Image 1: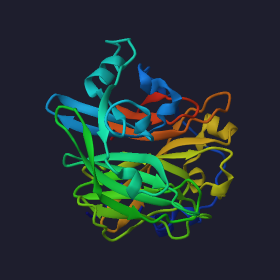
Image 2 (image 1 turned 180 degrees about the horizontal axis):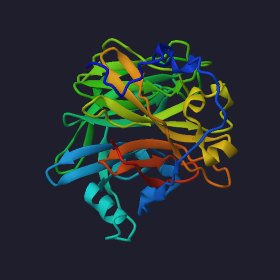
Image 3 (image 1 turned 90 degrees about the horizontal axis):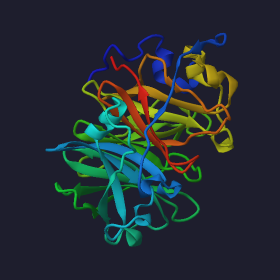
Length: 347
């Protein structure tokens, strides 16, 4: 795929590496922030122990289902490895349109992954979920020793939603790009006939050779893709659209000193939101584009979320687009399980 006009083309230094943009600092610029509309949930998913870590759309004959992935499905009743959750897109839209004011009750889908614990030493849960051509793909984080190790695994969701069954023999290893505790590839992007996985840390001080890993749908590794330096954490990504454009959650918890962030190049270019000017934490969405020549930044401002007044950071870990309306996103257990909507008019 050729780079479309949405990609940065001038100056060349912007395309080459966002972590070393070389752009002259600008005076403080305030750009609009988006309020997160919280959608209430019911049932076991409300508990902070859900630790939701990913979102993905799954098409069925009855309509689109939003899959909500807990980091530890075994904490819930269902199959031999617990359960994941799902919401009907129609129910979400009905709530947003004010046609329903009740809390939404996700269904539980039994989850089967026989022998996964014996195949993944130091298993630390599931970090991302994606759907491509009817198959479901999950990433796994593990700590088998002093360092971390990531995995990609595929599975099948039964049409009647009676089970999500992982093929544990499909496991593919993903070596971390930097020796950082609790960090592996935490995002999966469905992009045509490819799967792209993203590491959690692409800051200039902690990841000197940033890349995105590419796999075919059988989880055979392909050539890595170049990736721009982006400060803070990347915790999830949407699927790529027909132009290869996708969005990532870009998050910074003020106490996360191991990331050693440099002055933020995106702020130098675009400015930041009102509450971000006042607080250290960062909660925003950044647009990128998948091309055959690598992942490239898109020339448009990040979408900043309005931060909480008390400074509490919301660890957003799941993200999908909701058609042309905007985005849906979820937190893990910090500060609690939150399911939210951000209105954004997609071009």
